[in-house]
Image 1: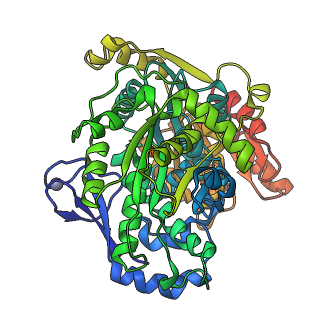
Image 2: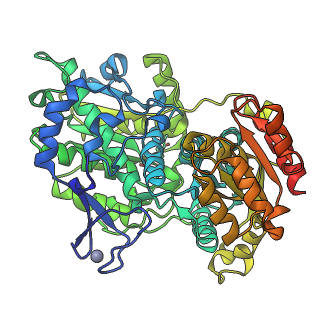
Length: 560
Ligand SMILES: *Cc1c(COP(=O)(O)O)cnc(C)c1O
Ligand SMILES: [Zn+2]
C-alpha cells in the first residue's frame, strides 16, 4: 500500500500536504490543527475486497489509518473487542437495544490501546526512539506497553493524583515516570517543555494525527458488530450489512475519543456503509465538566476549569481547548448530540449497578458514561426505541507494588504561579533535575533489526543512555568516528565487515581503541576466535542466554 492514499488537510487554511509525523504544524499557515483525508472511493473498494478475509482487530481497517506498513511484532491483538448486549441494564431503562463496547478487553484494559498501537506504529515509521507524554493514567499505561514492544523510550508526566497502582504499572513497563504535583493541564505543559528542551517527540493529544485516527476503529467495529444483533444478519465484512447506532456514549476528558469516533462514522457514511451518523453523548465528571458548562451555555469555546474537583482523575482535563469547539460544531451540524455531567456519587452507584446487573466491573471513569446514559434516558433525551452503544473500559490493579523497588518515579511540585514563569525558571527549572550531568552514549552495531531493538529496550529500561544503532560494521565505524561513544555493543557475525574486523579497525585509531566493547553474539566461538578477542573486549555475551540484568551489570562495569 502506498502513502499516496491519504494526505493531511489543515483545518484552518484548508491546504493539503503529505503526512509526516515529525512535522507538527501546517506548512502553509502554521496551524496545529490538521486532519487526514483518504481516498474513500478506493478504500471502499479495498474494504469490499479484503475485509471478509481479515481478522477482527484494529488493523483490518488499515486503509483508513495513517500508517504505511503494518508492523506485526507490535501487535497485541488491539481492537476487535466484543460488543455486548446490555440486557438487564437495558430493561431497567426500558431500552431493549442498549449495547456495551467492552474495551476492558484491550491489551491494557482501556480504549487507549487503540491510540497507543497506532501512535507507536507511526513513531516506528518515523524512526522515533524516545517520546514524551502527559497522562491521567490510561494513555501512559497503553503507550508504555507498546513502547516496550517497539523499543521506544518513554517519559510519562503524571499528576500525583493518578492512583499509585496505575503509576506503578506505567513504571513496570520501563517508562520513566515523572510525578507532577499539580493539575493534568500543568503536567501537559511540563511535558511539552521537557520535550522541547530535549528535542524529543511529544504526544500531542487531539493534535496528534495518529491518535485521533486510531479512535475511528471504535466506530468501524461497532458498525460491523451491530447488525449481528438484528434480524437479517449475514456475513461480517459485506458492505450493505453495516449498521450505525443512534447514540455513541463515552466518558470524556480531553475528547479525542468522540472526535475520532465521529470522524470514523462520518467516513463510513461517506463510503455508503451506513445510512446515518450517530449522535454523540459526551459525559463528564461534575467536578471537571468544562465542555458540559459551555454546551449548556451555548458557547463555542469552553472556559477551562483551573481546579478540577473529582475523584475520577482519568477525567480531569480542565482545559479541553479547541477539541470542544470542533466537537460542538460537528455535532450541531449533524443535528444534536449531548454533553452531560454526573457526580462522583452517581458514578460510584452506577459502578455497583453495572457489576450487579451486567457482570461488568469497570473503572470509575468508565462508569461515568453509564451514569450519564441513565441520566439521558431519564431526561428523555435518549429514547427507548433507539440503539445506544456505551464505551466501557476498566482497569484492575495487579501486584506491581510488590515487585517494584523504590525510586521508580521523579517528583516535581507544580504550583500555578510557577507555570506562568518563564521557561528555565521556577517549575521549569525543576526539569533540570531530570537531566543527568552526562548521558552515556552507546552505539549498538548489529545487522539484525530485532536484535538491535531488544538491546535498545534493555538499555532503555536500565538507564538514561543516548543510544545509536548501526546496521553494519561499516556504518558502525563511521558513527564511532563522528562522535565516539562511551560504550560499543557489537555483534560478531555480520556480512561484509564482521565484528572482528570492526575491532581491528578500532585498534588502528588510538583514541577509539580504548572505548569499551561488549560483544553480544549468537556464535559459539572457536579457540582461535577467543584469542582474537582477548584484550579487546570487556565482556562476551551469548544471544539467547543472557538476561537483561546480566547485560546491564556488564554495561555499568564497562562505563563506570
Ligand atoms: C481516556 C479515557 C477517557 C477520556 O477519553 P477522551 O476521549 O480522551 O476524552 C474516558 N474514560 C477512560 C476509561 C479513559 O481511559
Ligand atoms: Zn494551514
